[in-house]
Amino acid sequence: MKIVGPFAQILTLNHLPLKGKLSDQQLEIIADGGVLIDDQGLVLEVGSFEKLHQKLPHVETELIPNAAVLIPGFIDCHTHIAFSGSRAADYAMRVAGKTYLEIAHAGGGIWDTVTQTRKASPQDLVDNIVKRAERHMRAGVTTLEAKSGYGLSIESEIRILRAIKQANAQSQADLISTCLAAHMKPRDFEGDAGQYLQHLIEELFPKLREEELSQRIDIFIEESAFGVEESEYYLQKAQKAGFRITVHADQFSTGGSVVAIKFNALSADHLEASTEHEINLLAKSDTVSVALPGASVGLGMQFTPARKLLDAGACVAIASDWNPGSAPMGNLLSQACILGAYEKLSLAETLAGLTVRAAKALALDDRGSLQTGKLADMQAYPCSDYREIFYQQGELKPHAVWKNGKRI
Image 1 (cartoon, helix red, strand yellow):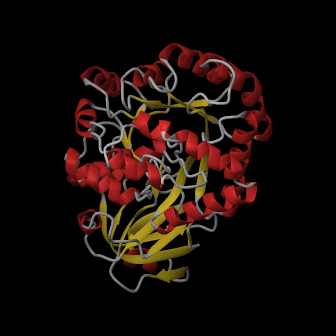
Image 2 (cartoon, rainbow, N blue to C red; image 1 turned 30 degrees about the horizontal axis):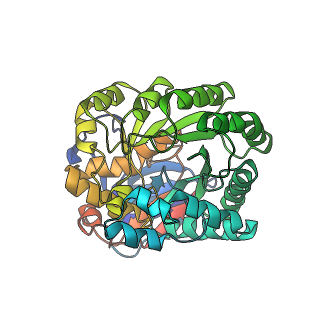
């Protein structure tokens, strides 16, 4: 057991509704605060540092010598960090005005990453994932989702998911694996998109269960990937097999979010193309709307309509979409600050989208806020006012990060 503090401010993220708009006045801020943590890495109490110390004078104290603001660890609920290679050539062509199809025809696009990832050794895959997860951890991201999807064959997808599982055992951050074998129909598959999905259902799903490689199934519903009807069949089979559902939805065209809602998906991610119709449906559902500003920046396209979603009553999380093609930056805080500036989000809405609401997108009720019984996943910034964290748009870095109560 130990007391950590004192902190100029502690933002607990307690008592916030999981849906709808938020004002900064709703944030619980404890001045000159401390956190009591048990030996299992769980929060026992958050309150005045002085009072905690007076009540428990003999408990070990981890002193914070300089002014700092403590917030929960970030949760990045959508990443594609299991890949090899680079798509710098794609980026150069994109900013020069080439279209997605033109880049693909020139040898770029998702298939380029698939080719490079298939060539990587199992150890290289693990090392790359760990390296990216540790970079995220140093930036205050204590939990992150990691998708497959750059294998696009039974053997390669299993190899990637095994690598994520091994990386999770080696990384200080928690990695939540998601199977995105339905990223696109592979070029080397002999059959149509529906037949490829059936192949995954019959050959991949049992292996995921057998090796406990993932409890989550994702699919990219888009004109260039999989259509609504075949996606519904795939997700129906996934749910029947006991998997949780998440969906790449409404990035370039609508349809995916409606499918996500129909199957009570944990989240519908992207939503840049969502109209008032989809926004209202999402707001009435229990599906989390995940904004991916990194993809908007990377592709030079509109942002997820986060303001409209929140005003309508939706639960909005913010994730990095870190991937080698459309979102190579991987800086979650900078992306969230950019989204907040363009979509006019309150700091409370941005912060909740990176913590408690992101936890909901991953069905994790043991983290995302600093309160009794939750994991002591925390990060401290060298300032005395939490607004500085967002004002500096990602340039202010955490100078301390704790995972399960242990400072890394």
